[in-house]
Image (cartoon, rainbow, N blue to C red; front, side):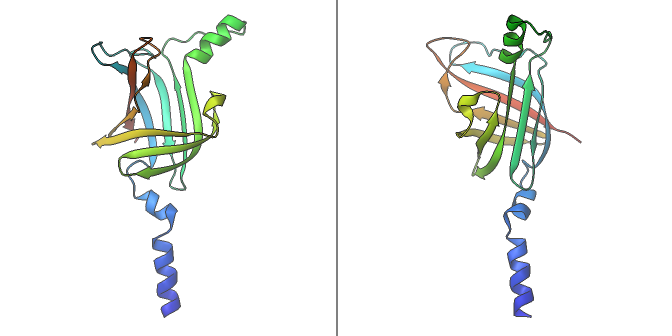
Length: 156
């Protein structure tokens, strides 16, 4: 009987079961992506209707893929560079610490992210999740600091 209780307790406290209960687990559609700079209007870097998904599994893996609206395909170097600039993708193991999502990136569209931890502050509002990056150099306003804000909606 003690062994059965110990096995049950071990099962109930496993990381996979614990993560299954977290509201992050599931499939999320990207609704908007903005660059927020103090004193400036929010910039929709990937347009008003970006495309993308975030998938977080109960086993602790996360995958993200985002693309800008109105992308044009092509195989010439300039076209391929434009495609690269209009997307972001990464995968890795994740953990949640309080309101922070930390992704240990193992594969990414940007090789400099591989082997790093990417931290996002997340909050939930009904079927929406808002994720903010830490403040960093703005790609939209050089010399200024920005926060990237991504808004997702749970896919049903």
